[in-house]
Length: 373
Image 1 (cartoon, one colour):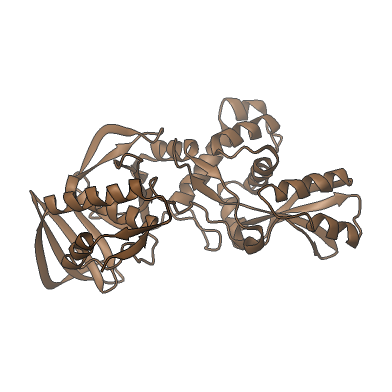
Image 2 (cartoon, one colour):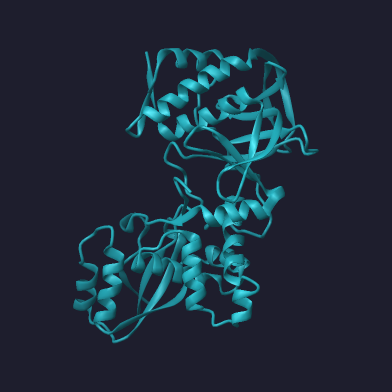
């Protein structure tokens, strides 16, 4: 009997099968297109509910080795090894690609034939379950390092964000100017929910004589993480989120251009124009997010287990970005990310709230990849 999977799950397993079928991955450009450089794959590693699978590419065959990885990252095989043909994965990948392109809803029905193939190769989780947030690990033939951990993003399905918002990703603006009475605060907060509710509340505060000025990051860990980029970076980020709501600009590079014009840090023009200060800081931040920075986890500048990103394009081609080429990786993120709006109720932002005798208005930071460049 056929089963149902989400588009995100199908997008991840498609990417995995496509890599096994091709035996290589093409590096990406800053514009999210394929370059003319291909990296041959020696082995793929993926986690299942009952352990680790290694897929070793040997000509037209794939050797599937089942085992366990200990806390030191050492793989131990348990004696089970299966030999499969790359052509089998080619056929399965084409079927999955067709399902992704034809499916109009969030869920996709997996036909019996594909389900039987999953069972035959002992794949039960279409999305990998890992503690280190990697979706897959790859050993390339040209690299000395045995494995590189990658996260997968697929433009044919909803994509996990780089920064998933949440209450720990809130920034606080202090309300000053006119002192609001409680009925006025209630009137502001009572504005109906909608896509522009946050902007409408900020504009209403201004009409009533209030001023919203950056104050702090709501979560102390996220504050320190942002300050690792620059001591004043939280203020810059708050201005970008404010602009996103008030002016409707969402793309990271376009918001950064507006920040250059505003110059919220009041730095010298030479530092802005010749040294590209704001672009440089934003690229550092995006790269840190892509390589593992999280709002509620202490970030010390060291890269996590994630070493790169695999991006599946709308035509099914896969391109990769790796930390060994940070310039291209960060340029890609700068040109292909946007600020997004999370749920005001769930993430607890977009309202005037009283704290220690003052009122604060929180904004939420959520950053995702563009569906198309």
